[in-house]
Image 1 (cartoon, one colour):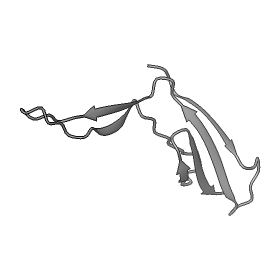
Image 2 (cartoon, rainbow, N blue to C red; image 1 turned 60 degrees about the vertical axis):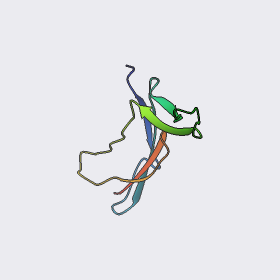
Image 3 (cartoon, one colour; image 1 turned 180 degrees about the horizontal axis):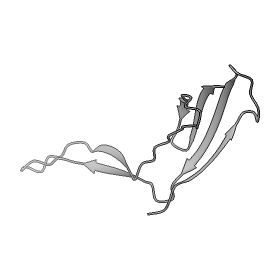
Image 4 (cartoon, rainbow, N blue to C red; image 1 turned 45 degrees about the horizontal axis):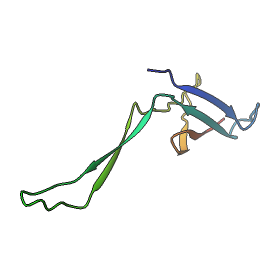
Length: 89
């Protein structure tokens, strides 16, 4: 399995106490794969249901943010490849 990749940037290089810090994280994994399973049920007479599809992700990714000051970083958004977290300086 491939190792995930990540880059991160903050909205500023310096902050005053109480300032809002916003971090944008771009991440991915070359071997994360979505899979779709299609199900059809057929009875003994050959009658079939309409197809139903379900999806899953193999090898999902989780983003965790922590800093050495113990501040709490809250997730604002995460679309599966870009996450935004905020904290107070």
